[in-house]
Image 1 (cartoon, rainbow, N blue to C red):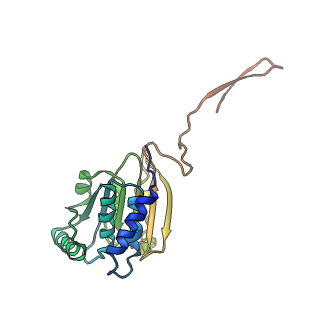
Image 2 (cartoon, rainbow, N blue to C red):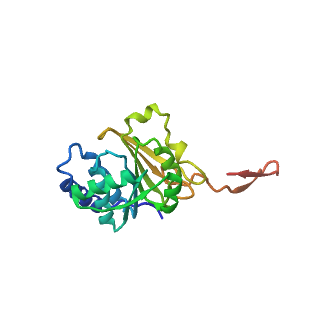
Image 3 (tube, rainbow, N blue to C red):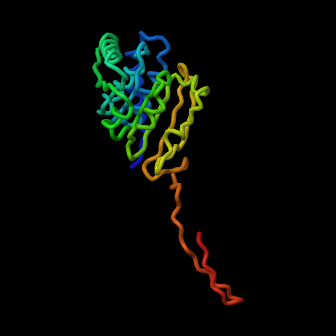
Length: 220
């Protein structure tokens, strides 16, 4: 089973996010990620949030989870950040999403089957968060926001995602907000961008040379 795009759900989430985020400046990121998460019908949406960060993206993800009947979880490093996040969400949109506090290795063990994930590049541990993410077997979409500075960090998608049967199918960088760097990760077993298996099954073909009478075995 693979991720299937639903344009109707994406549109509804986009419109609802636009309505909810009217009061925020530069909330284009929120509307985009909300539409993407809803369009991919994400059931487990995970994000990281930094103290003092914008709240619009979180509102968009919460709206997307409601359209997909999914779960939206925000991961923060400490109780102080958790308190600030919850207060900001209630004041801005009267929302109360689930919040987990702790180190990536600890928190991510509780989140199995992530479909859609947004990490903040302002967090020093964002690469660790991505490495620890336990993605859905059918594939996932990963988003780095505030990604303009990542070019200086030596960050590479494949250094934090590719392992075993997981592969990055495609990536794209969008100059939205302060930069969105996105990657589509394959389902378990790995697929190429065209959707075909990366490891083709080999088969043996026998060929007889009519002139020499020799039998040739070819692996194709």
